[in-house]
Length: 151
Image (cartoon, rainbow, N blue to C red; front, side):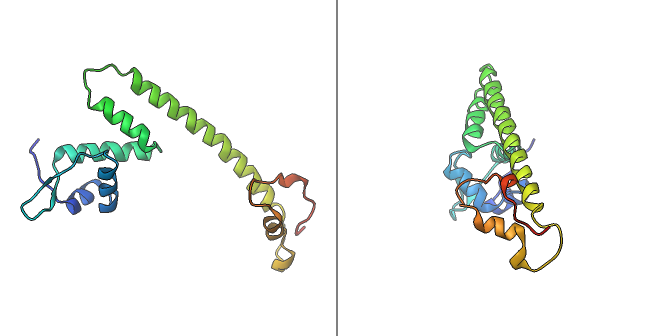
């Protein structure tokens, strides 16, 4: 593989990232600092491309930056064993399972809220809007106990 030198816009284009995201990952020390040209442009190489692709793939799996940072640490130690990598992924899998349960609860609340208005009528009689207005805003309400609506 030939080593290439890219400016930040080229790196962004090649990896599907934004310039702001690349700068942010540098600030978060997920990407190593690039070298600089005589005109002080950031200059990136194949290592940056591969690392940024790795980060983007982790983000597509909804991993947090701390999880990615940990995985990058393991990635940077190729002779270490991968037990820690497995632990990070196991933790993330549990996190995702918990979020799925939360989202199922949210879906049920939204379905119950949607059932508050079964026909088209004036918005001042809309059970959905009434329920949203009556909510206290701190925690989702048990929508099944409310009897008002647009039925």
